[in-house]
Length: 155
Image 1 (cartoon, rainbow, N blue to C red):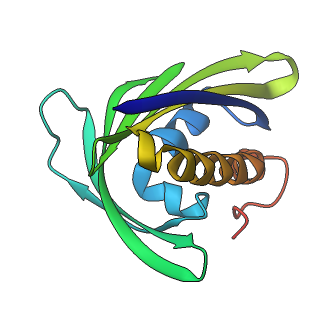
Image 2: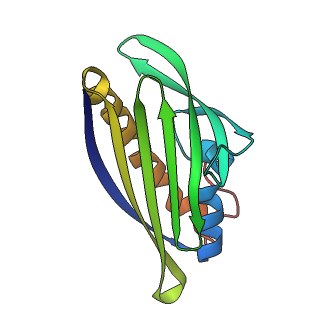
Image 3: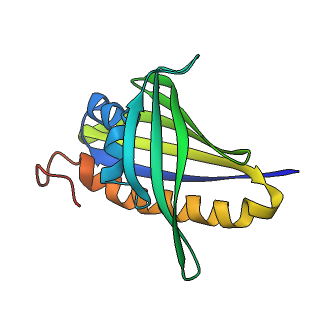
């Protein structure tokens, strides 16, 4: 049996739509922002994908630390919309639907909906990890894209 839930966040950055879309659609750059990612490798696109990746995360469960590997695909990559899906055994998927919109004064609004689906026994742990990681990513995203600040994204 699978469980599912969604969380959302919004980020504003002073950059162009193209800069935001380029960062968010290139998963090799997510290691700059995502606190769990330790390695991203681009692989040949899987059927239906614009780009495909193999990603390694470092997770913690109490005192135990472990690495996990999963597959991620960019399904839609438009200047105003990006959709990615990550799949991991057993039967766990994370769907990221990002919408980008230019706002006044050179700002870009980034609205993100994350839906996680996982086997019920794993769901609470997986959802907590995903939400914490993506909210941490959100706090770094604006600074990484902000063209009025430093040229280099924060580490």
